Image (cartoon, rainbow, N blue to C red; front, side):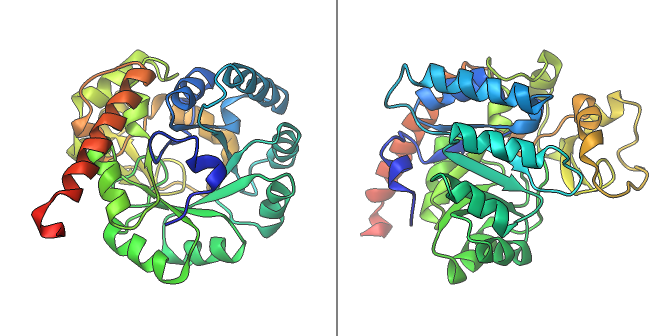
Length: 313
């Protein structure tokens, strides 16, 4: 297994708080990193490239006060409809963002630009074709977005996907999909992933930018309340059924949607809320620091238990 040494030495937990559209902001990122977990946010959570640059400056200045904080990362959407990509990529280079998470397009030229200043690139993949394409583009890590993940999720079983990726890829593998506890991060490690990727669990935190009704809905729902459909944004994604109903939609009779259009995303995701199958195990809204400490304690206990398991002898 492999994690860049510049990251590994600063982590207290092998995990990433996923970049969540309209949810992740400076407070969530900084609190996560200060707790020893990689914190991330989408560049598009700021309405302009200038605002994105301001957020990066704020995050770095706050993290400078904690020299041993975990690194932070930014999600860049590499899709033809994202008209801000070039500008946001230049801002990322100017600020030397440690980790860039690319989505919806693995482009070697983009990867090379990030590598030019020493940045690390992880890429979201939902199937093996995308995984091989991203590996060929030279990314440093593959985020296996498996069945049950929130946001733009895939359909593959995590056991199958991690094992297949490991057959041809030696870089970092990150597992995404219904991970809400330290025990599940430990399980991800034991099955061959390097890092766990948590989204839904971090929506329901004090520092999350999600509105209170969204956080409360996550506490009230379970896996049966997740609707996996391409008919909201044009790409298969997981949504909370109650949020679709509250918006006047019938989850069982959604009209087909055209191609993904990033200019429409903010309007869609503002009231139609995403979550993964792990929502059924989320029961509180702690501070990010409290959550990270809990995850670290759970992870360490789980790995200790695994080490003394009589079947492991």
